[in-house]
Length: 429
Image (cartoon, rainbow, N blue to C red; front, side, top):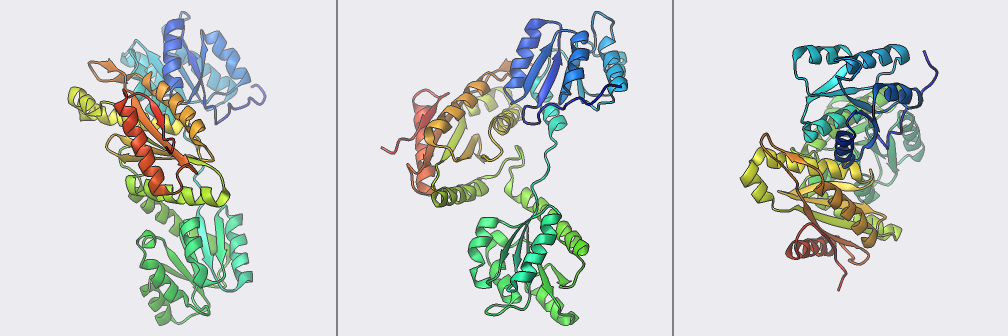
Protein backbone atom coordinates (compact mmCIF):
# COMPACT_ATOMS: atom_id res chain seq x y z
CA UNK A 1 0.00 0.00 0.00
CA UNK A 2 1.40 3.39 -0.99
CA UNK A 3 1.04 6.66 0.88
CA UNK A 4 -1.35 9.52 0.16
CA UNK A 5 -1.90 10.10 -3.54
CA UNK A 6 -3.28 13.55 -4.35
CA UNK A 7 -6.55 13.81 -6.20
CA UNK A 8 -6.52 15.77 -9.42
CA UNK A 9 -8.19 19.17 -9.21
CA UNK A 10 -11.96 18.95 -9.48
CA UNK A 11 -11.87 22.04 -11.67
CA UNK A 12 -9.53 20.39 -14.19
CA UNK A 13 -11.43 17.08 -14.13
CA UNK A 14 -8.31 15.14 -15.07
CA UNK A 15 -8.79 12.11 -17.34
CA UNK A 16 -6.15 9.43 -17.95
CA UNK A 17 -6.53 8.01 -21.47
CA UNK A 18 -4.48 4.84 -22.01
CA UNK A 19 -4.19 4.28 -25.76
CA UNK A 20 -1.36 2.63 -27.72
CA UNK A 21 -2.20 4.25 -31.06
CA UNK A 22 -0.94 7.88 -30.87
CA UNK A 23 -3.29 9.04 -33.63
CA UNK A 24 -6.37 7.59 -31.96
CA UNK A 25 -5.19 8.93 -28.60
CA UNK A 26 -4.77 12.45 -29.97
CA UNK A 27 -8.11 12.36 -31.77
CA UNK A 28 -10.10 11.10 -28.78
CA UNK A 29 -8.31 13.44 -26.36
CA UNK A 30 -9.21 16.38 -28.59
CA UNK A 31 -12.88 15.37 -28.74
CA UNK A 32 -13.12 14.91 -24.97
CA UNK A 33 -11.20 18.12 -24.35
CA UNK A 34 -13.87 20.16 -26.15
CA UNK A 35 -16.19 19.39 -23.24
CA UNK A 36 -13.89 20.88 -20.62
CA UNK A 37 -11.90 17.82 -19.54
CA UNK A 38 -8.11 17.83 -19.11
CA UNK A 39 -7.01 14.65 -20.90
CA UNK A 40 -3.59 13.08 -20.28
CA UNK A 41 -2.76 10.42 -22.88
CA UNK A 42 -0.63 7.48 -21.70
CA UNK A 43 0.86 5.04 -24.24
CA UNK A 44 0.92 1.84 -22.20
CA UNK A 45 0.05 0.08 -18.95
CA UNK A 46 3.44 0.79 -17.39
CA UNK A 47 2.84 4.52 -17.86
CA UNK A 48 -0.56 4.16 -16.21
CA UNK A 49 0.90 2.39 -13.19
CA UNK A 50 3.49 5.11 -12.79
CA UNK A 51 1.02 7.97 -13.28
CA UNK A 52 -1.48 6.78 -10.66
CA UNK A 53 1.32 6.71 -8.09
CA UNK A 54 1.54 10.51 -8.37
CA UNK A 55 -1.96 11.67 -9.31
CA UNK A 56 -5.38 10.17 -8.88
CA UNK A 57 -7.44 11.07 -11.95
CA UNK A 58 -11.17 11.67 -12.00
CA UNK A 59 -11.62 8.83 -14.53
CA UNK A 60 -9.43 6.32 -16.41
CA UNK A 61 -10.35 5.52 -20.02
CA UNK A 62 -8.54 2.55 -21.51
CA UNK A 63 -8.64 -0.47 -23.80
CA UNK A 64 -9.10 -4.01 -22.56
CA UNK A 65 -6.59 -5.56 -24.98
CA UNK A 66 -2.86 -4.76 -24.71
CA UNK A 67 0.35 -6.54 -25.88
CA UNK A 68 0.67 -8.02 -22.40
CA UNK A 69 -2.49 -10.04 -23.02
CA UNK A 70 -6.02 -9.95 -24.43
CA UNK A 71 -7.44 -8.91 -21.07
CA UNK A 72 -4.39 -7.10 -19.73
CA UNK A 73 -6.17 -3.75 -19.41
CA UNK A 74 -8.86 -5.13 -17.12
CA UNK A 75 -6.28 -7.10 -15.16
CA UNK A 76 -4.14 -4.01 -14.48
CA UNK A 77 -7.16 -2.08 -13.22
CA UNK A 78 -7.90 -4.91 -10.79
CA UNK A 79 -4.26 -4.74 -9.71
CA UNK A 80 -4.38 -0.98 -9.15
CA UNK A 81 -7.52 -1.28 -7.06
CA UNK A 82 -5.90 -3.91 -4.84
CA UNK A 83 -2.59 -2.07 -4.47
CA UNK A 84 -3.84 1.44 -3.92
CA UNK A 85 -7.46 0.92 -2.81
CA UNK A 86 -8.46 3.95 -4.87
CA UNK A 87 -12.04 4.08 -6.14
CA UNK A 88 -11.15 5.47 -9.56
CA UNK A 89 -14.01 5.17 -12.07
CA UNK A 90 -12.88 3.28 -15.17
CA UNK A 91 -14.35 3.31 -18.67
CA UNK A 92 -13.21 0.62 -21.11
CA UNK A 93 -12.92 1.08 -24.87
CA UNK A 94 -12.28 -1.92 -27.10
CA UNK A 95 -12.75 -3.38 -30.54
CA UNK A 96 -13.99 -6.48 -28.71
CA UNK A 97 -17.67 -6.69 -27.96
CA UNK A 98 -17.82 -10.30 -26.79
CA UNK A 99 -19.24 -11.28 -23.43
CA UNK A 100 -15.87 -12.49 -22.11
CA UNK A 101 -14.24 -9.08 -22.55
CA UNK A 102 -17.26 -7.27 -21.12
CA UNK A 103 -17.44 -9.61 -18.16
CA UNK A 104 -13.75 -9.13 -17.38
CA UNK A 105 -14.24 -5.36 -17.54
CA UNK A 106 -17.16 -5.55 -15.11
CA UNK A 107 -15.14 -7.74 -12.74
CA UNK A 108 -12.35 -5.15 -12.86
CA UNK A 109 -14.84 -2.53 -11.70
CA UNK A 110 -15.53 -0.90 -15.06
CA UNK A 111 -18.28 1.71 -14.96
CA UNK A 112 -18.86 1.74 -18.73
CA UNK A 113 -17.82 -0.18 -21.84
CA UNK A 114 -17.68 1.20 -25.39
CA UNK A 115 -16.86 -0.60 -28.62
CA UNK A 116 -14.95 1.09 -31.43
CA UNK A 117 -15.65 3.35 -33.20
CA UNK A 118 -16.51 5.25 -30.04
CA UNK A 119 -19.68 7.32 -29.87
CA UNK A 120 -18.15 10.39 -28.22
CA UNK A 121 -21.53 11.84 -27.30
CA UNK A 122 -22.42 8.72 -25.32
CA UNK A 123 -18.94 8.65 -23.78
CA UNK A 124 -19.31 12.27 -22.61
CA UNK A 125 -22.68 11.41 -21.07
CA UNK A 126 -20.95 8.78 -18.97
CA UNK A 127 -18.02 11.06 -18.10
CA UNK A 128 -20.40 13.76 -16.91
CA UNK A 129 -22.23 11.25 -14.76
CA UNK A 130 -19.03 9.86 -13.23
CA UNK A 131 -17.40 13.23 -12.53
CA UNK A 132 -20.38 15.15 -11.19
CA UNK A 133 -19.77 15.43 -7.47
CA UNK A 134 -20.71 19.03 -6.81
CA UNK A 135 -22.25 19.80 -3.47
CA UNK A 136 -25.75 21.24 -3.82
CA UNK A 137 -26.06 24.95 -3.21
CA UNK A 138 -26.95 25.66 0.44
CA UNK A 139 -30.63 26.12 1.17
CA UNK A 140 -31.61 29.79 1.38
CA UNK A 141 -33.86 30.77 4.29
CA UNK A 142 -35.41 34.22 4.72
CA UNK A 143 -36.21 34.98 8.37
CA UNK A 144 -38.88 37.61 9.08
CA UNK A 145 -39.12 38.55 12.75
CA UNK A 146 -39.41 41.96 14.40
CA UNK A 147 -37.24 40.73 17.29
CA UNK A 148 -33.67 41.13 16.02
CA UNK A 149 -32.17 38.93 18.74
CA UNK A 150 -34.46 36.02 17.90
CA UNK A 151 -33.77 36.45 14.19
CA UNK A 152 -30.02 36.38 14.86
CA UNK A 153 -30.41 33.20 16.92
CA UNK A 154 -32.30 31.46 14.11
CA UNK A 155 -29.67 32.63 11.63
CA UNK A 156 -26.87 31.17 13.73
CA UNK A 157 -28.65 27.81 14.10
CA UNK A 158 -29.36 27.48 10.39
CA UNK A 159 -25.95 28.76 9.28
CA UNK A 160 -24.24 26.20 11.50
CA UNK A 161 -26.26 23.57 9.61
CA UNK A 162 -24.81 24.87 6.33
CA UNK A 163 -27.70 27.05 5.17
CA UNK A 164 -27.61 30.62 3.89
CA UNK A 165 -29.84 33.10 5.67
CA UNK A 166 -31.10 36.66 5.44
CA UNK A 167 -33.09 38.43 8.15
CA UNK A 168 -35.75 41.13 7.89
CA UNK A 169 -36.92 42.85 11.07
CA UNK A 170 -39.45 45.21 9.46
CA UNK A 171 -42.12 43.19 7.62
CA UNK A 172 -43.04 46.23 5.52
CA UNK A 173 -39.53 46.18 4.01
CA UNK A 174 -39.61 42.54 2.92
CA UNK A 175 -40.27 42.83 -0.82
CA UNK A 176 -36.79 43.87 -1.97
CA UNK A 177 -34.94 41.22 0.11
CA UNK A 178 -37.49 38.64 -1.05
CA UNK A 179 -36.73 39.44 -4.69
CA UNK A 180 -32.95 39.62 -4.29
CA UNK A 181 -32.39 36.69 -1.91
CA UNK A 182 -34.71 34.20 -3.70
CA UNK A 183 -35.34 32.01 -0.64
CA UNK A 184 -36.09 28.31 -0.70
CA UNK A 185 -38.13 28.83 2.47
CA UNK A 186 -39.51 31.71 4.58
CA UNK A 187 -39.40 31.47 8.37
CA UNK A 188 -41.87 34.02 9.72
CA UNK A 189 -43.10 35.28 13.09
CA UNK A 190 -46.89 35.34 13.44
CA UNK A 191 -47.29 38.36 15.71
CA UNK A 192 -45.50 41.49 14.51
CA UNK A 193 -46.42 45.20 14.74
CA UNK A 194 -47.57 47.03 11.62
CA UNK A 195 -48.25 43.74 9.81
CA UNK A 196 -49.00 40.27 11.14
CA UNK A 197 -47.39 37.17 9.73
CA UNK A 198 -50.77 36.02 8.44
CA UNK A 199 -51.30 39.26 6.52
CA UNK A 200 -47.77 39.19 5.13
CA UNK A 201 -48.19 35.57 4.02
CA UNK A 202 -51.30 36.58 2.07
CA UNK A 203 -49.40 39.44 0.41
CA UNK A 204 -46.54 37.12 -0.56
CA UNK A 205 -48.87 34.40 -1.85
CA UNK A 206 -50.61 36.87 -4.17
CA UNK A 207 -47.40 37.11 -6.21
CA UNK A 208 -46.96 34.26 -8.67
CA UNK A 209 -43.19 34.02 -8.18
CA UNK A 210 -43.64 33.06 -4.51
CA UNK A 211 -46.70 30.82 -4.63
CA UNK A 212 -44.56 27.70 -4.21
CA UNK A 213 -42.12 29.02 -1.58
CA UNK A 214 -42.87 27.32 1.78
CA UNK A 215 -43.80 29.65 4.63
CA UNK A 216 -43.17 28.26 8.10
CA UNK A 217 -44.72 30.23 10.96
CA UNK A 218 -42.97 30.58 14.31
CA UNK A 219 -44.91 31.58 17.41
CA UNK A 220 -45.61 30.77 21.05
CA UNK A 221 -49.26 30.34 20.02
CA UNK A 222 -50.59 26.98 21.25
CA UNK A 223 -54.23 27.37 20.22
CA UNK A 224 -54.74 24.77 17.51
CA UNK A 225 -57.58 26.68 15.83
CA UNK A 226 -55.37 29.75 15.45
CA UNK A 227 -52.56 27.61 14.11
CA UNK A 228 -54.88 26.12 11.49
CA UNK A 229 -56.08 29.61 10.57
CA UNK A 230 -52.46 30.59 9.98
CA UNK A 231 -52.00 27.58 7.72
CA UNK A 232 -55.16 28.52 5.82
CA UNK A 233 -53.74 31.99 5.15
CA UNK A 234 -50.77 30.56 3.28
CA UNK A 235 -48.55 28.83 5.80
CA UNK A 236 -47.05 25.38 5.23
CA UNK A 237 -46.09 24.56 8.80
CA UNK A 238 -46.38 25.96 12.31
CA UNK A 239 -43.50 25.65 14.77
CA UNK A 240 -43.28 26.69 18.39
CA UNK A 241 -40.68 29.38 19.06
CA UNK A 242 -39.01 27.30 21.75
CA UNK A 243 -38.34 24.47 19.31
CA UNK A 244 -35.02 22.69 19.79
CA UNK A 245 -32.33 23.79 17.32
CA UNK A 246 -31.91 20.32 15.76
CA UNK A 247 -35.68 20.03 15.30
CA UNK A 248 -35.75 23.45 13.64
CA UNK A 249 -32.97 22.43 11.25
CA UNK A 250 -34.76 19.18 10.39
CA UNK A 251 -38.09 20.90 9.74
CA UNK A 252 -36.52 23.60 7.58
CA UNK A 253 -34.33 21.18 5.59
CA UNK A 254 -37.18 18.83 4.70
CA UNK A 255 -39.41 21.67 3.50
CA UNK A 256 -36.61 23.45 1.63
CA UNK A 257 -35.56 20.23 -0.11
CA UNK A 258 -39.05 19.60 -1.47
CA UNK A 259 -39.41 23.24 -2.43
CA UNK A 260 -36.17 23.26 -4.40
CA UNK A 261 -36.99 20.01 -6.21
CA UNK A 262 -40.39 21.35 -7.23
CA UNK A 263 -39.01 24.69 -8.32
CA UNK A 264 -36.23 23.02 -10.33
CA UNK A 265 -38.78 21.03 -12.32
CA UNK A 266 -40.68 24.26 -13.03
CA UNK A 267 -37.75 26.46 -14.08
CA UNK A 268 -35.62 24.02 -16.09
CA UNK A 269 -35.86 22.76 -19.64
CA UNK A 270 -36.72 19.07 -19.67
CA UNK A 271 -34.27 18.08 -22.43
CA UNK A 272 -31.10 19.95 -21.48
CA UNK A 273 -31.62 20.65 -17.78
CA UNK A 274 -30.81 24.32 -18.42
CA UNK A 275 -32.96 27.22 -17.23
CA UNK A 276 -36.07 27.73 -19.35
CA UNK A 277 -37.09 30.83 -21.30
CA UNK A 278 -39.12 32.52 -18.55
CA UNK A 279 -36.47 31.93 -15.90
CA UNK A 280 -33.62 33.18 -18.08
CA UNK A 281 -35.50 36.44 -18.67
CA UNK A 282 -35.97 36.84 -14.91
CA UNK A 283 -32.27 36.20 -14.35
CA UNK A 284 -31.32 38.79 -16.97
CA UNK A 285 -33.39 41.44 -15.20
CA UNK A 286 -31.81 40.51 -11.87
CA UNK A 287 -28.24 40.40 -13.23
CA UNK A 288 -28.58 43.86 -14.79
CA UNK A 289 -29.86 45.28 -11.49
CA UNK A 290 -26.93 43.76 -9.63
CA UNK A 291 -24.42 45.01 -12.21
CA UNK A 292 -25.82 48.54 -11.93
CA UNK A 293 -25.79 48.43 -8.13
CA UNK A 294 -22.18 47.14 -8.04
CA UNK A 295 -21.09 49.36 -10.93
CA UNK A 296 -19.58 46.43 -12.84
CA UNK A 297 -20.11 45.17 -16.41
CA UNK A 298 -22.13 42.12 -17.42
CA UNK A 299 -22.65 40.51 -20.81
CA UNK A 300 -25.59 38.70 -22.38
CA UNK A 301 -25.09 36.26 -25.26
CA UNK A 302 -27.73 34.71 -27.49
CA UNK A 303 -26.81 31.57 -29.43
CA UNK A 304 -28.53 29.90 -32.35
CA UNK A 305 -27.48 26.53 -33.82
CA UNK A 306 -26.83 26.96 -37.54
CA UNK A 307 -29.02 25.05 -39.99
CA UNK A 308 -30.78 23.21 -37.18
CA UNK A 309 -33.93 22.54 -39.21
CA UNK A 310 -31.77 20.87 -41.84
CA UNK A 311 -30.20 18.68 -39.12
CA UNK A 312 -33.65 17.55 -37.98
CA UNK A 313 -34.81 16.96 -41.55
CA UNK A 314 -31.67 15.03 -42.52
CA UNK A 315 -30.94 12.99 -39.40
CA UNK A 316 -34.20 13.06 -37.44
CA UNK A 317 -35.42 14.78 -34.28
CA UNK A 318 -33.69 12.31 -31.95
CA UNK A 319 -30.34 13.32 -33.42
CA UNK A 320 -31.40 16.96 -33.23
CA UNK A 321 -32.07 16.51 -29.52
CA UNK A 322 -28.60 15.00 -29.09
CA UNK A 323 -27.09 18.08 -30.75
CA UNK A 324 -28.99 20.35 -28.34
CA UNK A 325 -27.74 18.32 -25.37
CA UNK A 326 -24.21 18.36 -26.80
CA UNK A 327 -24.16 22.17 -26.97
CA UNK A 328 -25.67 22.46 -23.48
CA UNK A 329 -22.88 20.25 -22.11
CA UNK A 330 -20.17 22.25 -23.87
CA UNK A 331 -21.57 25.49 -22.44
CA UNK A 332 -21.79 24.03 -18.93
CA UNK A 333 -18.26 22.65 -19.03
CA UNK A 334 -16.56 25.67 -20.63
CA UNK A 335 -18.26 28.50 -18.74
CA UNK A 336 -17.78 29.55 -15.12
CA UNK A 337 -20.05 28.40 -12.32
CA UNK A 338 -21.10 32.02 -11.83
CA UNK A 339 -22.34 32.27 -15.42
CA UNK A 340 -26.03 31.64 -16.08
CA UNK A 341 -27.03 29.37 -18.97
CA UNK A 342 -30.50 28.74 -20.37
CA UNK A 343 -32.34 27.29 -23.32
CA UNK A 344 -34.12 30.27 -24.80
CA UNK A 345 -36.34 28.19 -27.05
CA UNK A 346 -36.00 25.73 -29.93
CA UNK A 347 -32.36 25.79 -31.01
CA UNK A 348 -31.62 29.06 -29.19
CA UNK A 349 -29.60 29.35 -25.99
CA UNK A 350 -28.79 32.31 -23.74
CA UNK A 351 -25.81 32.99 -21.49
CA UNK A 352 -25.21 35.67 -18.86
CA UNK A 353 -21.62 36.46 -17.89
CA UNK A 354 -21.42 38.61 -14.73
CA UNK A 355 -18.42 40.91 -14.24
CA UNK A 356 -17.58 40.56 -17.94
CA UNK A 357 -17.51 43.26 -20.60
CA UNK A 358 -18.51 42.77 -24.22
CA UNK A 359 -14.98 42.30 -25.56
CA UNK A 360 -14.10 39.60 -23.05
CA UNK A 361 -17.46 37.86 -23.54
CA UNK A 362 -16.86 37.87 -27.30
CA UNK A 363 -13.49 36.21 -26.80
CA UNK A 364 -14.97 33.56 -24.47
CA UNK A 365 -17.91 32.75 -26.72
CA UNK A 366 -15.74 32.65 -29.83
CA UNK A 367 -13.46 30.08 -28.19
CA UNK A 368 -16.52 27.98 -27.32
CA UNK A 369 -17.86 28.41 -30.88
CA UNK A 370 -14.57 27.19 -32.32
CA UNK A 371 -14.43 24.21 -29.98
CA UNK A 372 -18.04 23.19 -30.56
CA UNK A 373 -17.51 23.24 -34.33
CA UNK A 374 -14.88 20.52 -33.89
CA UNK A 375 -17.12 18.23 -31.84
CA UNK A 376 -18.21 15.20 -33.83
CA UNK A 377 -21.92 14.49 -33.85
CA UNK A 378 -22.98 10.91 -34.53
CA UNK A 379 -25.85 8.92 -35.95
CA UNK A 380 -25.84 5.20 -36.65
CA UNK A 381 -24.98 5.86 -40.28
CA UNK A 382 -23.17 9.20 -40.34
CA UNK A 383 -20.79 11.57 -38.62
CA UNK A 384 -21.09 15.34 -38.95
CA UNK A 385 -20.18 18.69 -37.38
CA UNK A 386 -22.41 21.53 -36.20
CA UNK A 387 -21.75 25.25 -35.76
CA UNK A 388 -23.55 28.08 -34.01
CA UNK A 389 -23.94 31.83 -34.39
CA UNK A 390 -23.85 34.19 -31.42
CA UNK A 391 -24.87 37.77 -30.67
CA UNK A 392 -23.63 39.64 -27.58
CA UNK A 393 -24.64 42.84 -25.80
CA UNK A 394 -23.38 44.20 -22.52
CA UNK A 395 -24.11 46.52 -19.63
CA UNK A 396 -23.42 49.44 -19.37
CA UNK A 397 -23.40 49.85 -23.17
CA UNK A 398 -27.09 48.98 -22.93
CA UNK A 399 -28.64 50.18 -19.71
CA UNK A 400 -31.51 47.79 -19.01
CA UNK A 401 -32.57 44.18 -19.58
CA UNK A 402 -34.97 44.97 -22.44
CA UNK A 403 -32.35 46.90 -24.44
CA UNK A 404 -29.64 44.30 -23.77
CA UNK A 405 -31.95 41.49 -24.88
CA UNK A 406 -32.90 43.27 -28.10
CA UNK A 407 -29.31 44.28 -28.88
CA UNK A 408 -28.06 40.71 -28.41
CA UNK A 409 -30.90 39.42 -30.61
CA UNK A 410 -30.04 41.97 -33.32
CA UNK A 411 -26.36 41.00 -33.10
CA UNK A 412 -27.33 37.33 -33.46
CA UNK A 413 -29.35 38.18 -36.58
CA UNK A 414 -26.30 40.02 -37.95
CA UNK A 415 -24.08 36.99 -37.25
CA UNK A 416 -26.43 34.75 -39.21
CA UNK A 417 -26.92 37.29 -42.01
CA UNK A 418 -23.17 37.66 -42.56
CA UNK A 419 -22.43 33.96 -42.94
CA UNK A 420 -23.16 32.14 -39.66
CA UNK A 421 -20.60 30.35 -37.46
CA UNK A 422 -19.44 33.62 -35.92
CA UNK A 423 -19.83 35.89 -32.89
CA UNK A 424 -21.00 39.50 -33.25
CA UNK A 425 -20.85 42.12 -30.48
CA UNK A 426 -23.48 44.86 -30.45
CA UNK A 427 -21.64 48.19 -30.34
CA UNK A 428 -24.44 50.50 -29.28
CA UNK A 429 -24.23 52.49 -32.44
